[in-house]
Image (cartoon, rainbow over all chains, first blue to last red; front, side, top):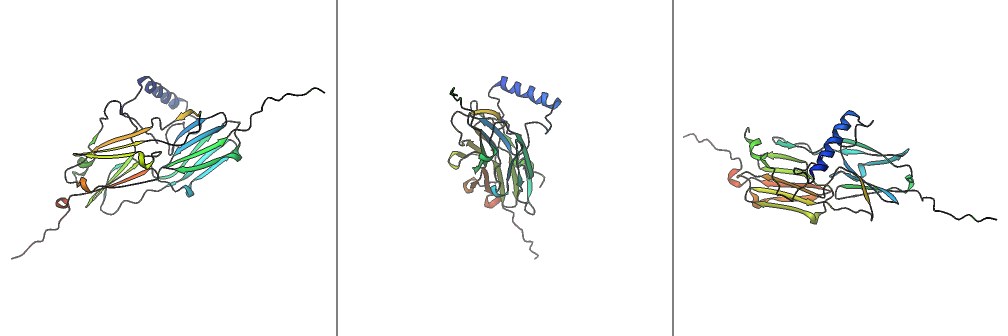
Length: 142
Length: 128
């Protein structure tokens, strides 16, 4: 899913994006590239956690399957749009409809058991804590 | 119904400078009594959604706002601006006084009925 903007706020950022997209067309990731697909995703990082935001409006959260397996996060589900009423005309058809599945490779230091997921305003927010990093310890000499 | 496309897809695509926003994807359905517009605006709380009808222009705007832990650094962003904005030109037979809006889980549903005089009327044929 693309959320395009009409006016690029930064022409250099836009050129960089274009270059990246072209590069990706030549060397796609094994799962078909990072961009595109439904739901759109933002990923953030803090020293203590990894935060994933899946933009999935109009989805029943009970029907969404979120899984972490071998360091890979999968978000899958179904967004079926209501059928077109009889004698109605569809003028613009841009919204995603059908089954979806997106996959994100997670960093190595996450703790899969600490993941939590919340759905609000059409955004599925998955927060996964990082493992307690080894705090420097003083070793006493006996 | 050949002129329907011309009626509704005349999208005005000229956001004013400094108002750059993402285009929310929409579906527009027309039936005999009006037009229904569905727009995906994920991440917009109800109080940050703005709908405006001015003359024959419909503006949909929304501010993206969601919980972010302190000190979060963005690694990858497909929703790259915190704002949505899209403008549509309405046609004259739509009754903008009677627009009904619903906003649930990031999906906006707008119902714009056709004015009474534009509703289909069956004309009886009298035989004298």
